[in-house]
Amino acid sequence: MKRRDFVRNTALTALAVSIINPLEGFAGAGETYLESEDLSPGIKKDQDFPLNFIAIGDWGRSGESHQAEVARQMGEWATVNPNNFVISVGDNFYPAGVVSEHDPLWHYSFENIYTAHALQCNWYPILGNHDYGSDPDAQVRYSKISRRWNMPSRYYAKEVKLGRTSDKVLFVFIDTNPFARDEKEATDKQLIWINETLAQASADVKWKIVVGHHPYYTVGPRITNYDTLAVRQVLSGTLKKHKVDLYLSGHDHSLQHLTPEGCTPQFISGAGSELTPVKSGVAYSRFEAAEHGFMYFSINKDVIRVKAISENGTVLYETDLNK
Ligand SMILES: [Fe+2]
Image (tube, rainbow, N blue to C red; front, top):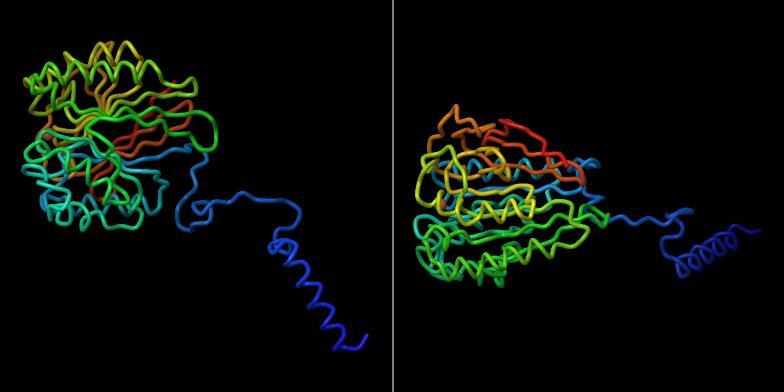
């Protein structure tokens, strides 16, 4: 065969293959199901824990009181560790929330602070007491402006799959402000919804996590404060009745892991900017630290692994909750 014919025949063969299947020449025998996140370099794959998220609370201070430093560390952490989303446990904007979805504080305290590419993921926020200082529903409406801010209502729930299995985690995001403010009608209405949501969890739900701003136990300054006691009164029975696996909150400005006897374990991640002191030596406290930072949760069907991480990236504490 003349060289000219060889080149022409080879080119035609390649063209025919590319028309039949453009990737056939590369794919070999097996078909693959790679997603973008599988191809992204830099992030370690964690085969043991298909679901990972960061929890941060009590943060919005225009970058001051170490908010910017914690935000930077969150970004660095999420760049090298798998992270599906961020949960904000409230007090998103100090001193008194936002007046609208166009309030400049969205830029001063959120968009221009949590700038890392790895933090351009879904955020699931709830409302803290400071968020009630202006228009709390402005934070719901911001969900229509922002790609990452997801707050469909003052309280809401979400079932999240554990990787590509059918196993799921149920997150119930609640608004504890009516409980702490002794607003009976709003409290009763929400409590009915919380009970129904937990009771109707699908059969595939392996873990139930409730997220609210106010703690129901704490070893911070609010250890016997009226709001801690009020929220305990409202929530304790419901958390226990539905075998909730953990309660996650903020409000006290520290990092805590508490296991009150016979109660649902609680984590406090309220150290996103300003700090308040903690009391050591309380029997039901496994860990308490008045240090700037956040928490990182890794979940599979058998284990929830929790890490408390400082603004410098130091793992201050690590624990496993087992099924
Ligand atoms: Fe608060």
